[in-house]
Amino acid sequence: MSQRRTRFALSLVAAALLGLSAAAQAAPSTWTIDPNHSNVSFSIRHFFTKVSGNFTRFSGTIVYDPANAASSSTNAVIEAASINTANERRDGHLRSADFFDVEKYPTLAFQSTKVTPAGDKLKIEGNLTMHGVTRPVTLEGAFIGSNPEKAGFEASGKVDRKDFGIIWNKVVDQGTMLGDDVEIRIAVEANSEATEAARKAADATRKPAGEKKSEANVTK
Image (cartoon, rainbow, N blue to C red; front, side):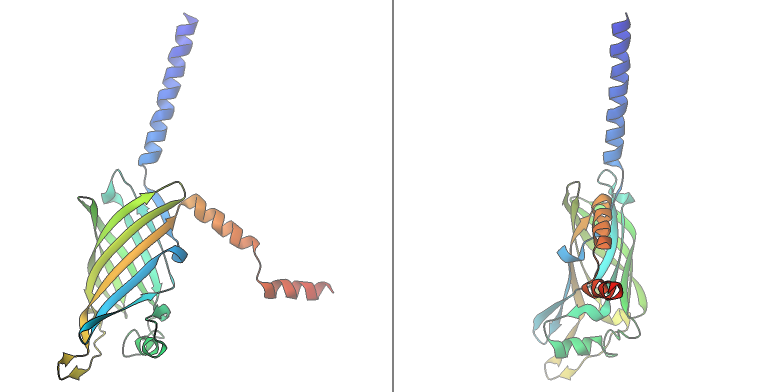
């Protein structure tokens, strides 16, 4: 009789542990964007072809629940001055008051307001702040996959730069030099909370060479 009770008790414990494990797997996970393995790029018409570029400094988080994508969210901040089109003269113009005016508006920001599953894609609605103007935008996103340390996401969309007060252009015989629509493509590799905590701890133990030299001079 005691053996039956013991087996029954063990079965209850096992069932409880399985239930907790399933709940943990179903719970939303927070991921921190890894800028070293992610890309925020754009393209815009220049005369007849597309010119592309990207931003090299950005940060953000993604809260994703594979069992309930509608409860997911994301936010990101981009440093406007980090714009890069592989042309220093053009990049300088883009940082100027004609375009991003980075001294006055140093960042771009996106905050999601709603995520809706759409087949194997995600419809991500949110507010984009650029050039000091905030407008609603919609991105098409996708969850690529994950393991305990990393997760992959993609998103793309289109915005009209004039909606954000970026209106500089030149009229030429064939029309205008620049298009108004800007295509956006985002590829994200993100760290789990544990991976991000370990990274920060490792960074904290590393000291810049200059700081080490200063400490050495003090001890002399």
